Image (cartoon, rainbow, N blue to C red):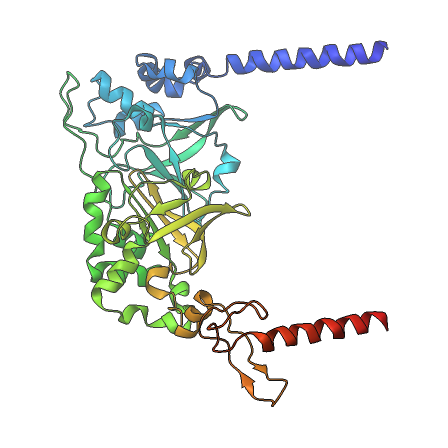
Length: 424
């Protein structure tokens, strides 16, 4: 019995040690204090409320800038403004633990990671996240704004400074990062101009950032539907499902002429690929109401041109009533715009479902006619009565033009035949 007690006591001690280690893991300024090359960044962090913010977080990555790089890259940035400095520092806190080995495994298309600045509610569209990309030639990891054609500076990851596995990772970068939309001309009092308006060009992202979405991009541009996105981006946002070029090539024969449809019908199909709300991938995976209206629903009326979105076998499935597609990749995801690649062209049943034939409609609404019976006397075909009549033996005079005696004799003969059959 002594051995199990010793095992449990050591296990308990191990848990206590881990808890103590984690409780002090996010004292970032203390961890950085032993690295004099980052003293300027540490002083900036200590003077801001961000150090306190970090103490309540876990599983984060902090990007720190060496002294020489900080002095060079901070020129023109009003860090003396407490509010600007705090937001810039929050932009250096990634809400995900990323070690150097994990950075080496990011996909070639890049990876969007949310920052602490996003949680303030002050981030302009695209200003609350960073896009991590890796060079295929030398493995260099670059941190940049996910907003296409943004003029904000990029930074290159230099090395790992410190790490508390799965809790805190501190990485050195060669430049100070500035969130998209930050007013670099802010006054000393910290009064900044309003964030810049969103400039998310969906067709440009599909044709230049995404790979293999040229057909969708050209159709959006030619139809004028892309211009409708501008107003939606400013509201609840939009979610675009973009079929890859291969999906258009694989259209069934009866729908292959999609691009030759009249302009308004083509626009209706394109609007059918857009939700009038911003949904990141995580929200789609756990969506509560699977039936979602599209931009075309707003024109056609409630309950029409809707998509059924569910999670099937670990993937997000989109059912139109005609086809079922799956999300294959994230092309762009930054509030208020999300663009996802899908495996098939989404065909609305309101436009492409074949109408029922007259024969099918008749079969669905009418009972089958009884087979005509043969008369036992002369073999002629008896047709059903054209109106309801009393059963044989109960019909009186006037029901069928006779007095009913023939029917009674017929019934009696049948009963006698049945009786004889039973006794034999």
